[in-house]
Structure formats: structure tokens, C-alpha cells
Image 1 (cartoon, rainbow, N blue to C red):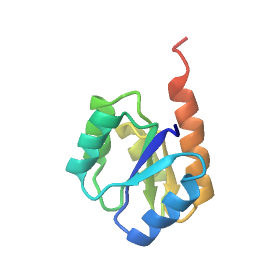
Image 2: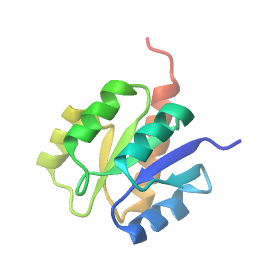
Image 3: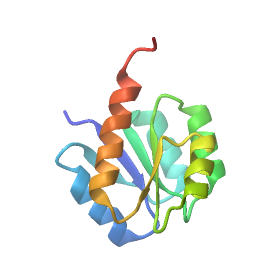
Image 4: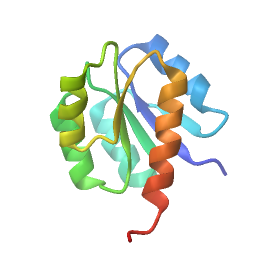
Length: 121
């Protein structure tokens, strides 16, 4: 059975694009709200979470990371910059990618999911 990835993306077109790019590797579930996301993370323990930080808050990243530290959080934004990237990493994100760069998001999810599966040294 394929590992799952949860996508919480404000823009439905970006969400569909991300889902299409990730589906060869993962079972993708597009989530409609923060509450649903937290519930699905707790129940399903996905391989990764993709979160639109343009719409959702860095405090959402912080609380997800605090409550589910083993699950990588890849954040997306239409126009990420270095300051935003650093703030997201400090909040607990694994990476920040441009929302329309599906290949980069997939690479980040694959890399961070693999890193999260490795035993601590």
C-alpha cells in the first residue's frame, strides 16, 4: 500500500496539480481545513504534510511539528523568499517550495520522508 501525503492548499488548482504530481509515489489526500488536517495526521500518520503557508500560519507549522515531530512538513508559497524559508524552517518545516513547482515539492517530500524514516544516530 502506498504511503499517504496530506495536502492543505488554499488554491484548488495548485492542490490538484500537487496531487497529480505526487500520486505516482503516494496516496494523496487533499484536506479542506486545519481541523481536518490535524485529525487525519493523528489517525493516518502520513509520510508527509504539504501546507500552504501563504494561507495558513507559521503557528500551524509550529503546532503540527510540536505534536507530530516525526512527520515532515513541506510548506508551499506562490513566491517563497529566503526570509520566509528561514521563518518556516525555524517553525519546524522541513522545506519551503514554490507551490507551482510540483517536481521540487515531490523531491522535497521524498527526501524528507526518507530522512524521517532513518533511525537517529
